[in-house]
Amino acid sequence: MNFRQSVLGTSDNPVSSPLSGLFLRLRRRDHVSADEEIALIDAVDRELVVEAGQDIFREGDRPAHCLLLLDGLAARYRTLDDGARQISAFHVAGDFVDLPSLTLKMLDHSMTAVSTCRFAVFKHSTLRHISEDRPHLTRLLWMVTLLDSSIQREWLVGMGRRTALQRTAHLFCEIGARLEIAGRGTASDFHFPATQNDIADALGLSLVHANRTIKSLKDMGLVSRRRDAVRIADLEKLRRLARFTPGYLHLEFEPR
Amino acid sequence: MNFRQSVLGTSDNPVSSPLSGLFLRLRRRDHVSADEEIALIDAVDRELVVEAGQDIFREGDRPAHCLLLLDGLAARYRTLDDGARQISAFHVAGDFVDLPSLTLKMLDHSMTAVSTCRFAVFKHSTLRHISEDRPHLTRLLWMVTLLDSSIQREWLVGMGRRTALQRTAHLFCEIGARLEIAGRGTASDFHFPATQNDIADALGLSLVHANRTIKSLKDMGLVSRRRDAVRIADLEKLRRLARFTPGYLHLEFEPR
DNA sequence: CGCTCAGTTGATCAGTATCAAAGGGCGTGG
DNA sequence: CCACGCCCTTTGATACTGATCAACTGAGCG
Image (tube, rainbow over all chains, first blue to last red; front, side):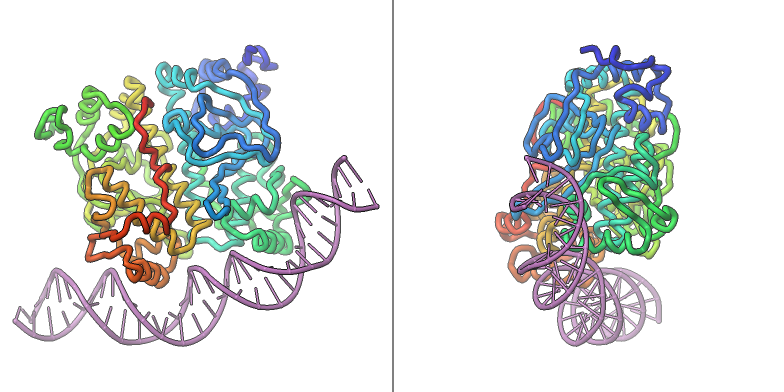
């Protein structure tokens, strides 16, 4: 299957590309040439769908490909030997979920599909060619791995020094901001199909406490959830409560 | 100053190079050609010393260079508006402390010298040339940023799901393992000049609780500290207590 | 129409924070 | 060479955040 042919428009209109989430993410931060976008589109080997609840990869795997999330919500996690699970990242459309495997080879954690996930599959060999031939594109891929790392650092800071309420508020702020960038909703109105159990595992809380914390955000009139849909009534207030500042998302456009 | 000339031996014996910590770190994971090592040595612009207690860079800085830690202990941190500080990483000899600035440009956190730190300074422009001309070396640099990210993920998991005692034990296990790789002591006998305040900020604990936790490791006869020197009496036992498994340090040697 | 899974609520408990103060070790200056 | 001061460490008492245990509710689905 030729992925380029499956694009509805031309590269003049790559929003219609299956890779639009990634392109929006990259173009927000640096100039991406049409040539580079085509190179990425051509590098796609195939598509892959993983049903909700299934693992995408597991700790110890040595994948021969990298996955770009096109649709759905995925969670990076590790399970400790006492059975406790800690989610270390949520990934949304446009996120390259296991680009680190290109150089780290063995994965030290697992990933699960929170909702049904559709991926574009890139063979390591193809990405390796890109890393040999296209320095700028390589730097952009490097950058997106560092963006993930930056988000992870923010989670770590929150885990250590923010209260449960602040962390919870912060998560809703962040997911909204990231989904907006990926072109999937707005910062105050988006879909986030994680259960309270997932949220608890991401925030380092017990299920019961996560429930009470989310409820108190609801009672304050800040966040409402109906099924997957999250609506933030007063984004400014929620961001103040969470002390959310989007600096760590590195939204500046500049040559990289 | 020509850094290559300052190397005592030739590249046959690069342990004597100021960059030995980095070379040991890289060579442990992949073949590094003499040519590549020389390229790195030649890329050093100058040395920089930062006194203990001074900041190395601050949130919002846009450095034009990257720093490789040659000696000393540095801490990556963020201060929240209520004054709380969270340390998100310790860095030891051989760590490239702000390689992410090469593509992220603006720094979203600060870094301080816990003990006096000596750095090799690499101009962004020089590293950019490496990223244009040396794909394999670029992948190795990419890899070391991902190693940091992997360690950070382990901290996040611990913060969410490990007790204070386990986290503390884990920190001592990790620092020992990393210092051994960098050729600075052994996993059970090393120097770690962080104060209990620093350790508390790294583990997301209060100073008082960090003190009690460290004391209980001491009372169990697992860890003893005299000034900067840490000695681990029973490494196996400490690792079991911490549930420390070094997989996340990615110590496998393989082509990257 | 009952089963299952997500969400909700109450009661109690444990781990860690906070507040307060005292005890060492080391360098500096007298 | 001693004393003072400062920073780091230690200890005690109390408060509070969030965990755990135990039900119960409600919505979707076969």
